[in-house]
Length: 66
Image (cartoon, rainbow, N blue to C red; front, side, top):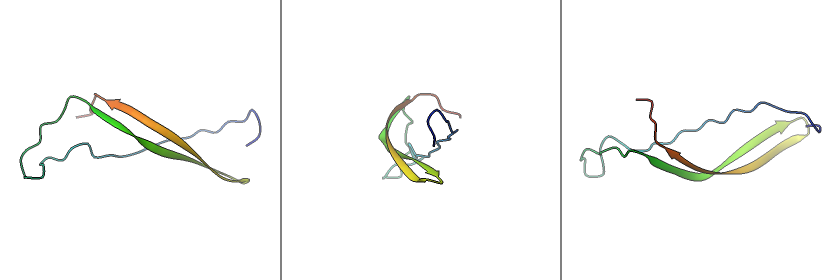
């Protein structure tokens, strides 16, 4: 990309926070919040080549869509 240019990006991901049943087939009580931490890679593909940029994630999830 040239200087002062921009590109729209969209980052999506998926992670299972809890299953309905634990290891002993006992019902799991959902927590009020979860911490999701790790590393993601943003890949930009241009006519000049492919460029990868690592991004550290540290997110607290406390609102759920259900």
